[in-house]
Length: 318
Ligand SMILES: [Zn+2]
Image (cartoon, rainbow, N blue to C red; front, side, top):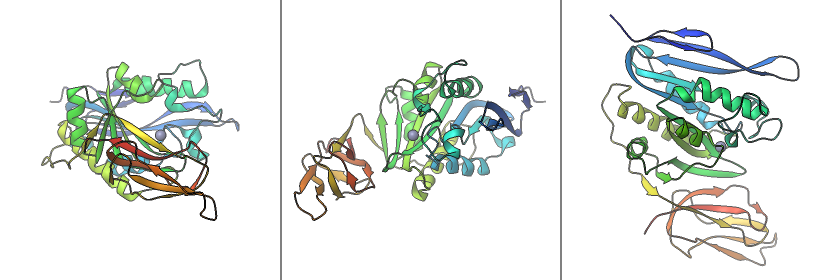
C-alpha cells in the first residue's frame, strides 16, 4: 500500500512511480502560436527530496540540455526516491534563435524571481519559480562559457552552508567555487525560496563539449546517490579544489591574443599566461596571472579589445 501523494503540475497528475511530460504555456510568439515550457517529471514511489534540473536559461548554452537528456535516460521513476523535475530548455526564445537572451535582449538569469506582469523574461522567470523551483529541495542550473569563452567544469555554490558543500563535493567538478549568486540569478532566487541550488558551468556556448557533458552527467549521478534518491554503490567523488575568489586577466591592449595556458592548468602570480600583439607580431604585451590558482576559463576567439577578459583564474593557495 503506497501512501505517497500524486504531484500536480500544469493541470496534470503525476502518480507515484510515474514519468510524465507536462507543457506549460509561456506566451504566444509573433505568429500567434503558443510557446510552452516542456517539463519532464519523474515522481518516485518512495518519498525523498525533490530535485530540479534546468538548462539553457541562456538560450545558446546547450551542454546542460544534453546532460539532462542523458540523466533522464538513466532514471527509472519506479526506482526513484523523491522527485526529479527536468526543464532542459528554459529560455525557449533564446534557444530557437541560438541567442543568450530573450527577444527584448533581457538576460533571463538576471530576471529572477520575476513577476507575472513584468517583461517577457520576468514572466518566464516567475513561471519557472512557481511551477518548478519553489517545489524543490535541491536544484542544478546548467551553464556554459559565453561570449567566445570556454570553461573548465566547475560548480558554483554557497559553501558556507555545510549541506550544500557536502553535495557540491559529491558532485565532484574539478573546481568548486564559493559565491553568492548575483541579484536576479536563478540560484539566488532559489535560495530565497529555501531551495538549495548549484550552478554547473562547463564548456562553451553554441556547441557540445563531450568532456563537460560527461563530467556533468556523472556529477548529477553522484548527487542523486548522495541524496538517497537513487540506489547503488556510492561512487567516490573525484577530488575537487575549492576556491573562494576568482580573478580575470584582462587584455592590456587590443590585438591578437595567443593564450599559453590550458583549462585546469595551475598558475602562479605573475606567471605569463599569454601575449597580445598586432597582426605582424609587433608590440607584444605579456599577460600575467594576478593570483596563484587554476585556469577555469579562457577566451577562444583570439581577437581582443583592450580591457577584455581573457583568462579566468580561480584563486587557490599554492
Ligand atoms: Zn549562462
